[in-house]
Amino acid sequence: MSRYKRDMPQPLFVTFSAGRSGIWRVERIDAVIGDSLPMGEALDVVAQPAMPAPADAIWQLTGVTSNTRYTKRTEVDALAAVQQGLGRPQATRAALIPIRKSEAWWALAQDERRAILEEQSRHIAIGLDYLPGVARRLHHSRELGEPFDFLTWFEYAPEHSDAFEDLVLRLRQTPEWRYVTREIDIRLTRRRS
Amino acid sequence: MSRYKRDMPQPLFVTFSAGRSGIWRVERIDAVIGDSLPMGEALDVVAQPAMPAPADAIWQLTGVTSNTRYTKRTEVDALAAVQQGLGRPQATRAALIPIRKSEAWWALAQDERRAILEEQSRHIAIGLDYLPGVARRLHHSRELGEPFDFLTWFEYAPEHSDAFEDLVLRLRQTPEWRYVTREIDIRLTRRRS
Picture (tube, rainbow over the protein chains, first blue to last red):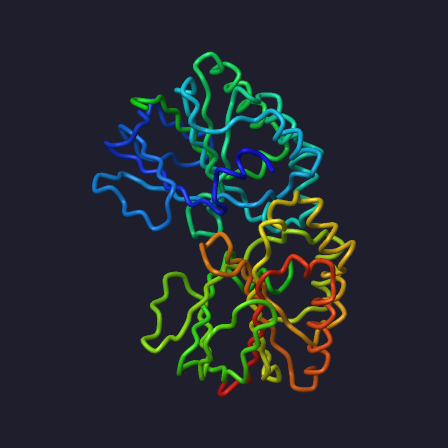
């Protein structure tokens, strides 16, 4: 059992609210594929079910952590051996990347999605290349009736900024990304801890 | 693309409400593993997000359909070739079986859960044995913060009642079921169509 599993109740509901309050300052919002989201000054990240929306929220996205969907035991163990948790003091940079995939993706069978995600695209292996520098937490949104299927949250220190750019560029060049119909890349820096 | 995929928006939110209203009369509620649920006279099944609860609801469970989690392409095609949809006029019997699995199950990697579910337990193959007689729809609840992980809904004609008993008994004898920590078996007959 990894440190992550011990610390976090599962499933964990997390709401990301853009507005004027929050410990993360929004540096930029780029629409990578499809429509963007309105700019906010700050982003608040609250792990809580049924949290009331801040009065000044410009937009709000909610996701929930879950069990692994594609990762095999050998891969889970390889990740657990090196990954670090969120909230490290030196990790003052963050990214929130909401993604939606096509109906064609969701109509694929489990083995077809796994083959594209890992055997063809090396999604899990690519993520492993950037551990422990880039910490990551995946939130599922599709079954919450949200506009995105996934909200991935990344935290890293400034010296890993170039590595993080490399990580997202490599993933965007994979066969898996042909199924991405909307992707927004939101970059943040910590205002206070 | 199966008939199911064309007719149903995905994900589909479904709420099951026990009380005095609903087209399904509750015949019995059996706690198979763990605590039961209070008896209601009738069950209402409403496919709709954000539906208001009937004033007389005794309990309410919500789930959401999703993509396949374990089923391979060959299995998806074998199921699609014979399965029938819900709502057949002759299918006047139904069962709602809410299930919760242990934390040990959810901590397993994807390949470990697949091996237990199908290679060891033949869950998909067993279901196939009872098609097209027993129609089925799986709803996921775990990531909605609900008390159960799954709500499975079955519909069948009276002449398939014995086959249905056989189906649930076979599943309950599998290695997969060692991970089930709560299971309730709710049987229903249609009051009106």
